[in-house]
Amino acid sequence: MSEKEILEMQRRIDEGIRLAQKRLWERARTTQQTLVICNEGEIVEMVPEGDSISANAAQGDPLMRRKNR
Image (cartoon, rainbow, N blue to C red; front, side, top):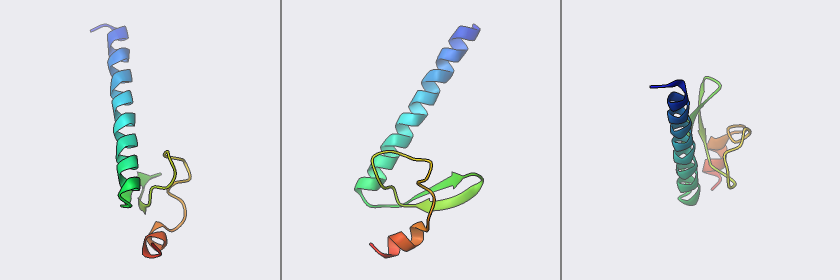
């Protein structure tokens, strides 16, 4: 396999992962469920809000937001 083919395969894998994350985010948001993610080495439960995954999505206290729903 050439270097170009390897880079193209890696690009497709990365694109597929991003699409799967987006679909999971949207599904959890529409069904009002929480997601458990690893953010900077810490396991965090979060409530998806908004239309896309943001860098600030894992901040705050998602357990309190979940209880207030």
